[in-house]
Image (cartoon, rainbow, N blue to C red; front, top):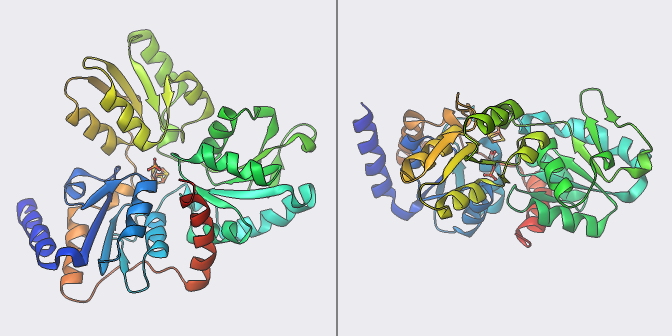
Length: 347
Ligand code: 13P
Ligand code: SF4
């Protein structure tokens, strides 16, 4: 039963003490989230993982790329465990290292040595490594602006992987015009742009988040008509049009903080992942809060981490036969750490 499983999780946590460290992303289900020793967005979790030098096992309740980052930032003897290997990220899957290695020489031919690569942390360790080896950096939604500014202080142009929306929204906020942004189509292996390519400042990888794509201009228009006093707040993984029509846009942490600080009685429609939206609704009963998309939008891969998988992973650690270790090879980790350090030094 659920209660029995919860009791066992607590028992193992108590037994292993500080040798076990459980991290939980804000998008995790409550049944898992409640057991986390530390929770946060992807930047906070990367920082927290990097600081822990005590735990022998770090159980990462989140998705694969986050567990890879934790492995890269922790010590050699610390093992990172992902309770379900199927917990990937469809956005991270939209940029493979093979595609990136094909794109780069084409872009070099077009633009010479004027491009610096930036990758959203929602990407494989191999891509982070490629970016690090080319003197670029990782970014998260909470530091994207700073990192894009940093990149422009180094080079004239940026290749932004793999989320076109975060890239476009961030660059636009910094004054880059939409007509100065091109799209790299990794399937067709070509640049999508109309005009003189010398005007291009940002090359957006053609990737997106299948969860945040579900928040639409139609959702906003409907709400504006029915409930004009609602504040609309969305994650910058939403499209440019949605971000422009919203009242506020920002990272997971920004969304949580903004609503927490908002006056009692205020009304909010949130455009981000469902588990987080539900948790905000439950924790702030003095405000009227809804999902911007009434059908609610779960991240199916985040949801693969559930109580049975968590318990299964913990029991394997207890028995000394741990399952699902995420291990990034040394060579890849060396490159990725350069990209992550370029970010963490400025985050
Ligand atoms: P943040 O936690 O950085 O806001 O990222 C959101 C997300 O989509 C995680 O996969
Ligand atoms: Fe990936 Fe989107 Fe899920 Fe985040 S919410 S893990 S970006 S699919």
